[in-house]
Image (cartoon, rainbow, N blue to C red):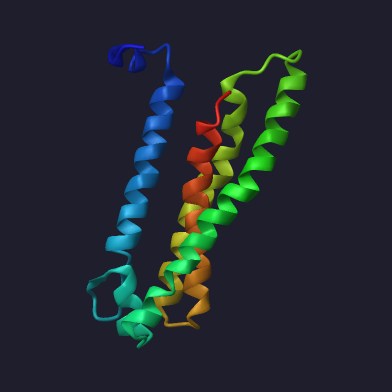
Length: 156
């Protein structure tokens, strides 16, 4: 396809997918670089939250990235079988004719997990709750970030 054909009204799924990818990429960038507003009213990065707020060393604070890895892993491993199940069910309803749009429904819960994870992460780090709670929020955010593009990139 030519690049101009992708922007035509005949391909709204391409335009919607590109917008979702931009939203998820921007939110991931903001999460890792300008993550939460702390009590001193300054923007903090992900590792400095653990160093300044939770008083962890650099090495120990770096272990909190495991929560992002767990979220990315769980997002892909849970998304794959659910996505295949939804695709098979919608394909059966369409006289065994598969369409790429049958993979789109899983994008909705994935896109909803992104703000939920950010809310949990930001709220709990602001009030300095136990260190595992912001990590749970980060894992939920990561699962949502990876599951929405995963649903649409498995076109087939």
